[in-house]
Length: 82
View 1: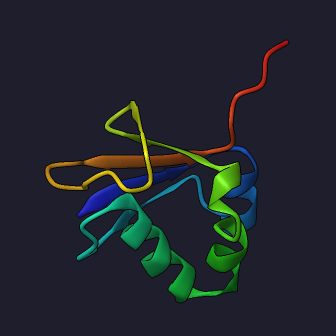
View 2: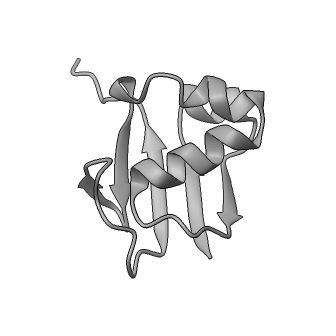
């Protein structure tokens, strides 16, 4: 089981701040594909992953990163400066 957290517009599209996910995915990209296949709201949230960033156990990562040993995955839009 992995805790998946959603922030900003990702949370708005999916309608949840977080959830526990049972997954066989080996990478973040595979997890995204599993989530997109669930239902339309997930497909909409992950339609363009180039507009997203991901953190694994609170460390920034790439979508090809391994999920081995990971307890938490967070998806969020890029941060903008002020």
